[in-house]
Image (cartoon, rainbow, N blue to C red; front, side, top):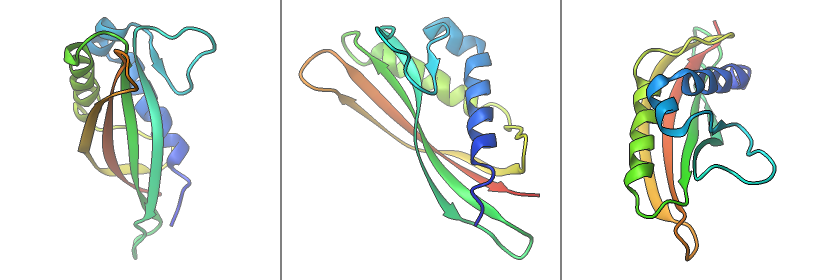
Length: 136
């Protein structure tokens, strides 16, 4: 197994999301790897958890990265969050990701979960993607 491409994959995902015009129209610059101190925007995108499993084979080291991109909002209802989630999905699936190390040999949307957070108006959608990467 190799975890060596994890940073390269994260950087490519973050770069894709921050450069996407359609997503930018919805959230501006509110795409985060780590939440900023203080107040957060009323709607934002955040990179989340990652699970990695070995996918090495006879051709070399590789891994499957299952990672979460979250859309969080305090706006009432799910409509705005779902619009942003669709833009995230479109941005990531629209073209292959280029990595600074290794290459993506498979990338797909896996699943999503939409939920209220607590008893207030906060809504969260967790989008889970799977990327198969090879270190060659």
